[in-house]
Length: 215
Image 1 (cartoon, rainbow, N blue to C red):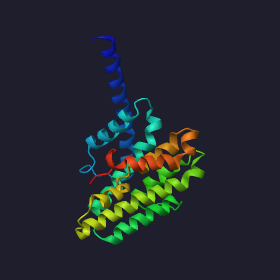
Image 2 (tube, one colour):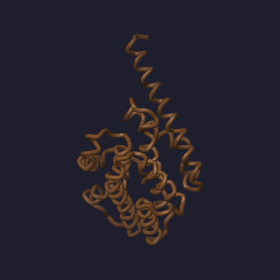
Image 3 (cartoon, rainbow, N blue to C red):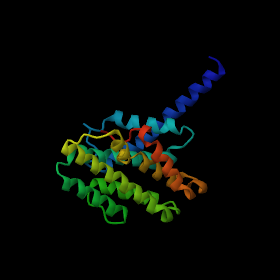
């Protein structure tokens, strides 16, 4: 095999190993939040698909640096399932949104979903810049949850959507929330200083980006 072929095989193998390491972390997370990740909805392929997507997006990174991105994406998937497949009333959706935003503001979590969010919040809190950037993270969380709630109402009412209205609600996908969480946790000083600009770029790309949230 030519040397360039060996190099490519090595890089592909390394990236797959990175995804596997990230996957082990996510499975440990799933075990910690009882009932939030039922096997019927979150089989082994779910974790593999998520971590392979992340690893091949940043094959140069370590599992530690990708940890928050992967966990944020997993949390989005879990909450999306609660909204799409568990909630049967608008009040249930609104209560979930209120509880999540309250925990983002520092409240004590009272459910598996909010415990996971609180742990994500606390992990971000290990980064000293989070104190100044927390408002952006919380704002993007609100945008994501509001988008999920709006999508639930559309489905409940059988609304016929225009392409423009669908794209305007793309925050419900959660990819921008994942991006913001990842940048706060791992980015350099320049990126953190320009986080609002980066968020605008993420919003622009969200309609064709990775599908973190199920629909």
